[in-house]
Length: 277
Image 1 (cartoon, rainbow, N blue to C red):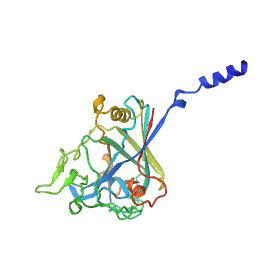
Image 2: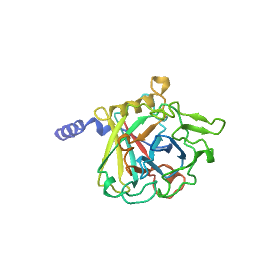
Image 3: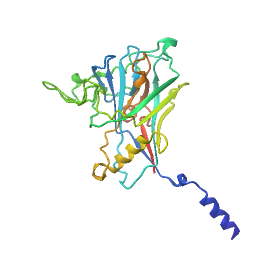
Image 4: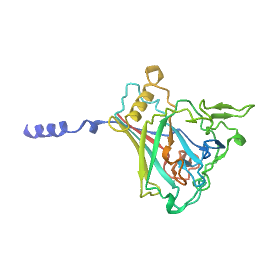
C-alpha cells in the first residue's frame, strides 16, 4: 500500500503541461514580397522560391514574407495554451555571402541583434508560382521574379493576388500607402535573433499567456473560426520594421517549397507552427 501511495504522489506531482497535446502544422502557403527603399512595388514576387526573407538587402530593397498554416483539423473546442513558430535559417545578409541582392557589406552591417515582427494578415492572398521550379539554394533568388510576366496569381508588395488586366486587379486595400499590405499593425509577436548565427539553426517566435499573448490569441481565434466567434485565418506577415532602413540586414529562412517541390532537402525545413493545448 505504501508503494502505491508513493506512485500516486509522483503522478500527481507532474505539471499539467506533462499531459499537454502538441499539434504540428507545416506551412501550406508561404511567399516573399519585395519593395524598394521608397516602399514601392519592385514588380517581382517569390511564390515558390526557396527563401523567406525579412529586412533589407545591400541595395536597401525591402523583403517581407507571408506564411499560412491550415488549422482546420483542430476542433473549435481546442484552446491552445502556447504556440511556437519555427523558422530554419538559410541565409544571413551581411555575412559576406552572395544572393538576395546584397551580399556582405563588411563590419558596418554586421548586426548582432535583429528584431522581427509577426503581423496578422487581414485579407486572403494567393501564393502564386513565381520561382517555380524551386531552386535548392537561396543564392541568386533574393530579388524574386516578375509576377506580371508570370501572371500566375502571385502575392506581391501591391497585390494579394495579381491578375493581369487594364488595370490589373487584386490589389491590397492599403497598396501605395503604409502599411502597404492588409495587416493588423499591432504585432502579434516580436522576436530578437542574435549572433552567433549558424545556417540551419532554428529561430522561433513564442506565444503564451505571458509572452506575445496576441500570437496565442490569434491562433485560438483561427481555431475557433469565423462561425464560432473567431477570425478568418489569412496567416502572418514576417517583417523587420527597424531593419528596413539598414543595408544588408535581412535574415532568410527556408520556405516550404524547397522540400515540397524540389525535394532537394531530405526533411521538411519550411515554417512549422506548433500548437500546445
